[in-house]
Image: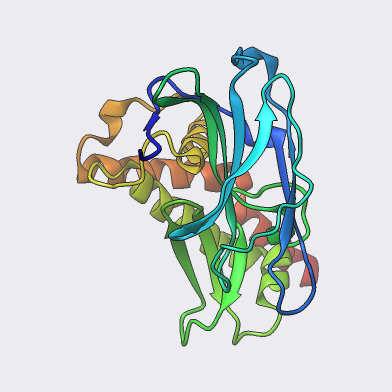
Length: 255
C-alpha cells in the first residue's frame, strides 16, 4: 500500500527554529547532515506525532526518522546516499500524526536551506546572492518553486558579490527592481507557487512590513492590480532604504 498524506489544517514550523548543516564526508562521498529542530510549544502538537526530516534535490529525496514530538532523537548517520549530486540540497520538516491509516501532517516547513549553503551565514536570507555566468547580463532574479528566489550576479565580473555589499549605486539600481519583479511573481493570480509554501509566506510578510500594513487579497485580483501593488512595494522599500539619498551622500563624500 502506498504512503498517503492528508495535509488538512497543517501548521507552519517557523524557520528560525530550524538549523540544518551539511557535513562533508570527503571527496567523491555523499555529504551527511545534522539538524537542530525546536518545535515551539505554541504549536500545540501531539506529543506522539512523528518527526521526519526529508532532504531532497528535485525528484530525488530521502526520509530520516527523528522520533516523536515528545522524544525527538537525531539518527546516528544521516548520509545522503540517495540524493542527486550537483544541485542545492534542500530540506523538509514534517510532523505527522500516524494514529490513523492515512498519515496527517500536523506541521511542516519546506525549502529549508542548510546553513552551509548560505555563504557561511547562520541567518537564512530571504534572498540568497549567488554567481553564475550570465553572458552580458549583470544580474537575474531566479525563482525555484520549492527553494524560493535567488539573486544571481554575473561571475564574469570579478568580486561582484562583494561589490554589491558596499556599492550603494548598484544596490539602488538592482534591489528595488528585484523586489518589484518578485512581488509580481508572488501575487500573480495564475502562479503555481502555493500560498502555504514557506518562502512565499515569508516574502508576503516582508512585503506587508515594507508597506506597514496587511495586504488584502483584493489588491491582487488581476495583472494590472498586481503591477500596481508591486510598484507600491518597491517604492516603499526604496523609501525605507533611502537608496538615492545614500548615492548622493556617497558622491558628496568623495567630491
